[in-house]
Image 1 (spheres, one colour):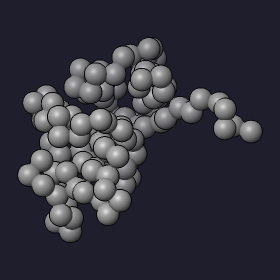
Image 2 (tube, helix red, strand yellow; image 1 turned 45 degrees about the horizontal axis):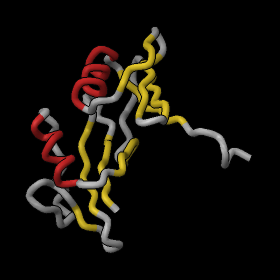
Image 3 (spheres, rainbow, N blue to C red; image 1 turned 120 degrees about the horizontal axis):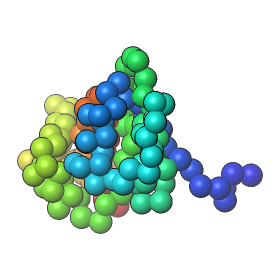
Amino acid sequence: MLGKEKIMAFAATQDGARAREFYEKVLGLTVISEDNFAIVLDANGTMLRLQKVESFTPSPFTALGWEVSDIRAAVSGLVERGVTFQKYPWMDQDELGIWRAPSGASVAWFRDPDGNTLSLAEF
């Protein structure tokens, strides 16, 4: 039934100004609108709604991810913009924090200002 409908993504923020700065200026998403309830962004045709909330606990797993064509270039570009990539002691990650999955995919993780875990993946 919903297989032909567009999906939208949601994340939460406790600080709308800080989240907007990060998603718009650092990640390069376009702001569609903002009100007291959410910041609405265009993530390459997918609507991302950053819900403004008083409190929440970020999930310990990936909340949002992007498929990129060149993960090393994408990671390097975000590092230049001040993003810190996560390094997990139980994973075999390279110097940039990129992990090579058994499938051959490459994945790297970082957090937004609210602690939401975001990822980049190259398949």
